[in-house]
View (cartoon, one colour):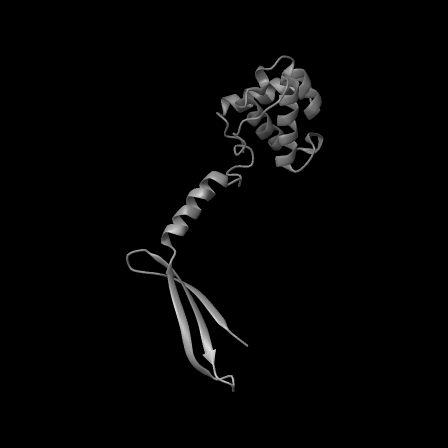
Length: 150
């Protein structure tokens, strides 16, 4: 059975090496020698980091990570997209969100400009299941706290 060892190491000057070792065995299976290859992969790691910075899709914040362009055919479609996103990130339907989750969702929607859309307050009240009075109280709370929801 051939056994190959792979290890990584870093030099004092910061270069990264990947080392491969394969043992040469005699008829009895005893190791009688080894072939060792050390490859400097520093530049490959740098390229990998550049590629990862362009393709990274991990969320930094549960709501703030979605700053990419959205292509829709109407403002209604855009609002529906953000409402779906709010539920997806909360992990539950809006009707099951507690007050704090609704405040954070409403803050996110406000930052995205959804509240500037025509009839937004009516749709959001229906979506979250609260009155217009509650909607405006929550909005005041968000804006007074400068987005610092508990």
